[in-house]
Length: 195
Length: 219
Image (tube, rainbow over all chains, first blue to last red; front, top):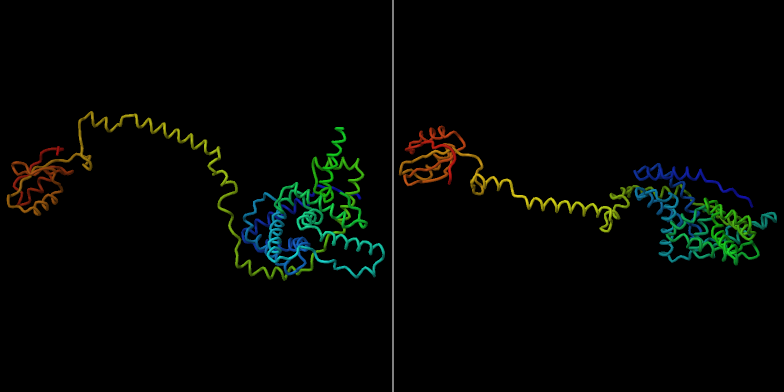
């Protein structure tokens, strides 16, 4: 499978724009805050749904996170990316909320179960694989699942993930290594995963 | 043997970094090393393909939350809490103020040394005022006026009450600096011309004598 490894200039532009938005939010600019809110609400919700299946709780954590962004925008010093800063707030909030609720931190079941019968075989196989991967990811410990998710579904570097999860870079690499080992066991025969 | 160890180390590094090769976040020397290793390692290439598959099928769509409603629910809280001001101290200030920071400690110690030298020099040097006083032999009590008063001698009628005496002296623009002498005279000092003071004193019926004596008096 061929993929391109570009220098992500668009990401750099986005980062610059987001840093500018944060600067305006710090002055109480509500329009800037709304722009940031609309950009991050779906990203954070997607991130959090692997930590809790409760939609009201996801929304509560997202709003708590962005309220902190509103209040603390002036403290953002540019030492990390805006996305890293916001995801770190969301991760801490989520861990705190889940601990307070004593809720098991797993993902929802695959909502697409039961619709496979109407699909051609290749689509059926794909959906089965998707369901199996979701189920396998849901069984990973929270720390491994979060590191895996931030890597593959939020395209973050190991440095950014280490900042978000407040741990050393090597810990993140180890978590990914163990996550892949575990997935290899859980998905044996369905997908080729080696470690 | 060394070659094998290098291969193993490269393989281990590639295995650690494959997730970030897959998500496109590897760059620089790490990217070059991992790509070079992939050219020679079928296992890592297969693992990378597997990671691409996981990446493609494992993501969940965003949950169907209503962003507009969620934002509307947050709005009242925005009214309640305004953005906080930036911290008054910039990051790093605290560490720069720490007592073990050699940069400013060296400067402070240097300044202290200079202050000690200056104070020592001042202590050893004789005072200019003391030297002058010693030379001209003058002595002045604390609180005494540093200026030179003119002196007027004045005598009063024997039955002049003390309060009347004080009124006359004050009205003349002078003050008592001495007396009474054995002849009953009072020495009055004044910054004004002694002739004027004497003239004013003479207008008083209780004054029997008022004569300018010249400048300065030794108490």
